[in-house]
Image (cartoon, rainbow, N blue to C red; front, side):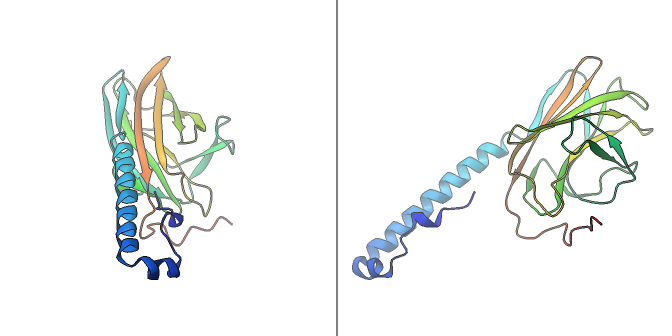
Length: 198
């Protein structure tokens, strides 16, 4: 969250007339904005967690990864562009954890093992973003028994800040739901320069 610059007086004439009162007002305003931002941030951060599970789940890795050229694309009618990327090697995470900062070209994802589901089994995965936009597709668990799900921003863009829910379904019911939070922006970009889309 960014403080609104309009909340702080900018008129130099007013500053000269009121002296220390303006400085005190500024300090109080900035302090109030910072406390409000901190409270909102802490509330969001507290939401990042494994929300539900109907079977034993091992969340192997959670974090952020940079856009890259995948090994192949798979059709996915439930995704905005109609396809998902697939890579046998998994995500190349540059950040670890379920609370990430906003960075250009940085996507978020997780890798998991689910009891009773192994190589060749199919699961349905779903990711909902802070605006309520849902992406979903079917996924066949690869040979290592670990499946992954992730979301990338549009080329050259950033993810929307807020709460993301990752869900997996199999055998007709929800297997688990996991929440991740994006806050920001980051001071430095881990994914610069952005990969070429040509």
